[in-house]
Image (cartoon, rainbow over all chains, first blue to last red; front, side):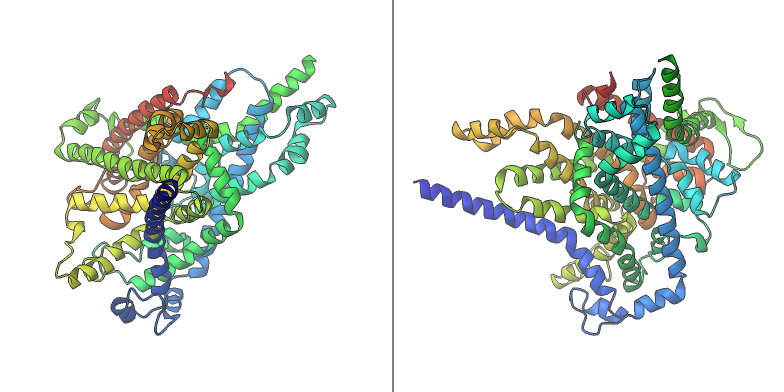
Length: 279
Length: 296
């Protein structure tokens, strides 16, 4: 009897694994076909679209892209913008989290609540005034114009605060009594302890900014200032006449960076995402 | 001592200043200004604005296009809840309670698409679902069927757009929900096994109530983030068409502001969206108590 039941459970479990593997395939196969088709000619990509290993592998799509757009410039723009945003969010986030964690002041609860509520502000309610401000500051078509309104991030403050919970209070208290200036405590104690958190939160910021589409489309109109998502958008035509191998080559270039970051920091990134949902 | 207090006060201000400044200039002031703009007719450039009172708000409920947009937004919310909340929740329960190995592997793999831009997702789905040259059309042709041109139908376009965000968000929400399930105490689960209580009962009676707060957080996030996420595929693939069929409140706001230059209409719609999100925020605080009471 017992053996039968165990067999039954094993069978059921295999069924669930089958479902989960199908989900993996549904999520990943499009990406694999994208990479594969980016190495095919237009004809091959149509006649053998579901062949994972191209019969006549070719770099021609990548070369065409390089001729049509200033690829290096676009990658650099994306990298530069994402770097400014990431550094800004880390610095402002660490400072604010430190203040919330170690200083007591009037209106703390109110400020914390105000910061966190910004997660619930739809971009449409701020985009017109922000566009006008960036326009008045003469920052249209610049990475700074894209980055400026995003130099702080409520989720980041929340994650840094949670990470600070792991630093023993006694440690901070003991150095504070010695009258060590707080910027030194932050620089020499908090930052080194939080290094893995800073890296993973930074990685998440960077990936999000690398992929950002909505706000940059409002600010970056000149093709020389484009970031990767905007350049890719230009290769997708709503009429259906898209040259897919070309669009797929650009997409492949675009996903390399986030994928590499994930490969290196996967465990840290998943831990940070997990902790963002916990109290 | 007093000196130190004073110093601390200065430091507090200094540490909060960068965040507060950006928040004030790029979030709080803009909300107020958008609210102000919602009472005027303006075109983003003209030196003067015409005061029109509540007209822009009234038009949200009387104008047939706006009514269509509101209905579409509700349709989007329902679809997003099913695809981006219920499906990942179901799968996270399977991974947590119904299988005994490979949990981490699934977590790592499911998360991968959330690393990619929605523009890549939009490109991929417009290839997969391309009525002429896509793989789905190819299979259907072999079966003697034809894939309809879904960009010609608002409802079908909405479904495909939601699927694109599902591809991206599924793994992210899965990780959040799985973490929540992980905090259900193991001894309670073991106890139900001892008493040979059926698994689904254990999940319904014990896991769901214990996991309520994180599940509700993901549910709210699904609506708030999801409505903003669908913006990208709408903008890349359909531009809201056919005839506003795949547009929603957020895309329509953008269209009014930056394509039609009807700043007043855009602002009123943005404020209404904001108010709905605030209601969701209020619900989140009520249900997920403790999240923001951290500093009481």
